[in-house]
Image (cartoon, rainbow, N blue to C red; front, side, top):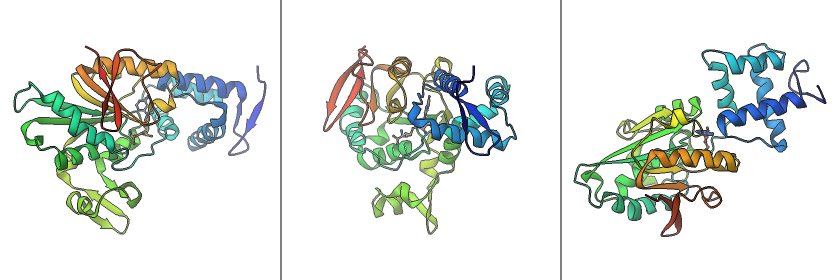
Length: 287
Ligand SMILES: C[S@@+](CC[C@H](N)C(=O)[O-])C[C@H]1O[C@@H](n2cnc3c(N)ncnc32)[C@H](O)[C@@H]1O
């Protein structure tokens, strides 16, 4: 039953309140992202933009396409529109200090020289986080040459992964990097565009992954450290729990999860114990 109508974007595109609620439920079920009523304008705006792009004026028809299109291409386009990808180099870098001073030394204790250490940035957005991890390790961990450090990086948004692989950034992404690090790891290609050097760009494995999808997450195993920062803030407690349980399976015994400063494991899971390294708390898999 239509209880209300919303008329936004082009006048002919109408989404009823019921349709909006149905869409949000479906989106939540598929991605873990919960849109509250406060986000209605943002969501509807992007929905109608997508509908207009393909010339659809019926939400019903568009919703069917989202659910049943075999390629999943339109679904992916919409996901790309609805994710929030804010990130920058050296964001919350005290955790990178905790990585080189506390977590890595513990992880390699008892491992042979040359052994693999696996670090995963999920979600990685446009790549600043995994590239920062690589740079920070190279600059600050004296034993970086003694181990095979594999850094992988994933996101649900295919557009940000393409940007990450390209490795070209604007000034606003680099504002926390010193002039020395900029010179060492980037070449300036225009007044506001900086290209990351190939050695760093090619050292990260990028892939698509949905943090609440068991099949997608099952491809990642034996990880030592997961950087899962600024993702859980978009989830509710149920999807937080789902994704943290899946991450637990991805980690080696004793592996670590780093969350964003506004996120915490309390209330979500008792499978991890909090560990304090310097000024930051990270979570260790209880084995
Ligand atoms: C704010 S960015 C965080 C990037 C980086 N970790 C940081 O802290 O700077 C949030 C990212 O989460 C991704 N995301 C949202 N839901 C996801 C899901 N279910 N699985 C994987 N990535 C997801 C979005 O596409 C977006 O790029």
